[in-house]
Image 1 (cartoon, rainbow, N blue to C red):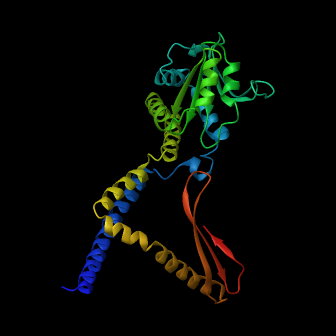
Image 2 (cartoon, rainbow, N blue to C red):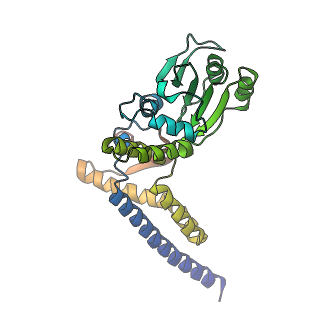
Image 3 (cartoon, rainbow, N blue to C red):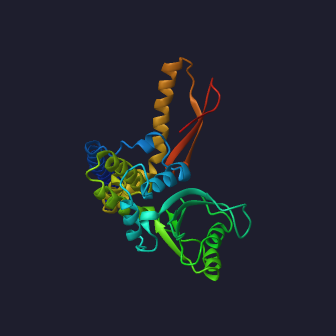
Length: 311
């Protein structure tokens, strides 16, 4: 067999593998979509209202109310006890006399003091557990140091992030040189998910509270890539791993596919506007949205219309 024939046979085999890969991938996607439909996973009020990424207005407010013994859930200190147990802080504060303060004002901001603390849990004896809540925002200069200086010896400062990343080493050393407080790193992906799961069990007999916790639980799972879409991606990765050549052949066709889709869009524009003309100067840019979602931005020039950008 000559070199040309061998190349042709290889291309035919890859095309066959690509078809099989696409078929199996479509089956996995269909399964995931059906699972999401049956469970109602895609129905999330926080996502619908586009407030799922707000640290103060959404996450601090919800965490504060769930943690509060006087919260609107009406379950007393049950959820606060579960939180302290999860963080291995049982007994550090009296849950019966604890109050929750959001955006606690600590005084004018300087290098060593002041600012606003996201969540402060404080009992009747003044013992405190403070939570610095980070979803996407970066740390302010000396932010944790200022909070640590305000707290008393024996208090706890929890640094809460999506995946449990701790504060930088410089900040940690500054805090260690100061008062003897406990600085703890916590994660939404692990600690908060597990705590909310326990809260869900505690609220099993209170439907509105239970389902509200489920909504927030699902939001956290989405923000930390633990929903069924992520499981689907794992299955697709396993599938692609078994046929690397077909996968990369499909990846190499990505731009050609995008251009075909844009040409179809152009046809629809012609029919809708009756302006005619072709789309030119097509550009594709991979971008990341405010909530960490990835999408492709398409820019083009139309013969009779100004430059447009489609997301």
